[in-house]
Length: 533
Image 1 (cartoon, one colour):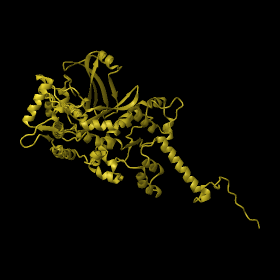
Image 2: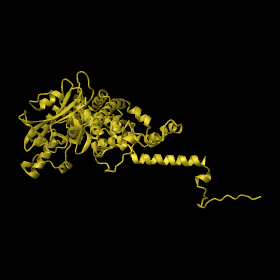
Image 3: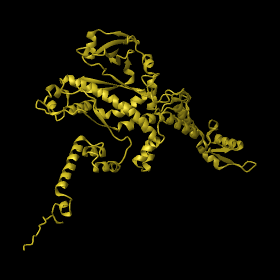
Image 4: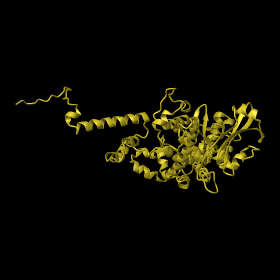
């Protein structure tokens, strides 16, 4: 177990590394960390993005070039997050409840599925799926997939924990920096910083198992100058607003707390950020683009070059016009009267060809290296920039364009799905105890949609042959061809298709008359005349 004595930034860094650096890089706050950018800002050569005030010695300057940030780091993180978040489909029970189980749903079960339209006479067609649906709704899970994967990629890990309180049974997701596993692998602590009435505290939630039972304990430490002093039980209950600080879960041998690492190895058991080792490349890309912007700013405007005699004559005219103080104030109208030099030359226009400014090609090379090192498809840039929209391609072509990113995303997806199943299992365990066995403990099925966006026409073309051959059910066909439809719409569509199928089967092969319900073009019933012999 962990003996909490101090809480500082070093405490976090020793366990999780410099995760706050990676968060700033993802957000585009690069000038805060890259030394060359700091020097340019302090010297007044550039301004920080989004900051109109020059963060330097206050020396006036005409240079207002911003620090250019091409945030490839964000693209590296967002690509798998977008692919995975859109692929998580319907979550359903692998153990549908039978009629006897549904009849046995007690008032405790009704209270568990908080938010359902239920009462004393409530009946559940499928208690298992209803419980899963309410856990999903209480957790607002569909809204959190992308956020979870982004945090997982940036920090290098993600924490999840089932919770049962007044808001119902749900799963909560935490950033990596609250997670502190025990060295023996039999427990873990979640540490939360709290500030109450100008006093600082550290709330530690601890789970320990002895292999048979699980014990959850809440502790509170007063934080003064980085040092921790444990508060007494009365103070802890009052500040945390809890009646009991310790809860035992008999028969629970696994922790409720779940941790999902990114690219974990034996050397980095808690995983590493997806941006690990890429900051030098990101710094160099920004540097090259910013230096090019400075050169452009200074040399893109045409300049006039005149001989020293002409310039002296202009200064004399300025002195006559504006006085001695205005000797260097040369009005452009004065250039209408000039003299030629001995070569017949009066003035020359000088302008740098900005197309020849170097560095852009090197920045492109660095970008490609970053994408290769992080298993990100180079075509991902086209999809984020919108260039892919100019070229309509099939879903298969999109798949191969993003092949490298999809392979990476599928690996993360499999671990994320397992992570979610473990959290659902913990929630269902709590529901089982709360409903006295009416809800069964299970890891539900999580359907997966295509990661690559495809048109509905492509979906129908791909699934229709299997459906017509009888190798696919109506429900599977409707779900696959309408992956984002609501459950109510899917059930209605299945009923409609089945009714139409029954109608066709009852009338045989439809003729023109049967298709028109035995009516003529004007809608009048068609009568059959039988000749009488």
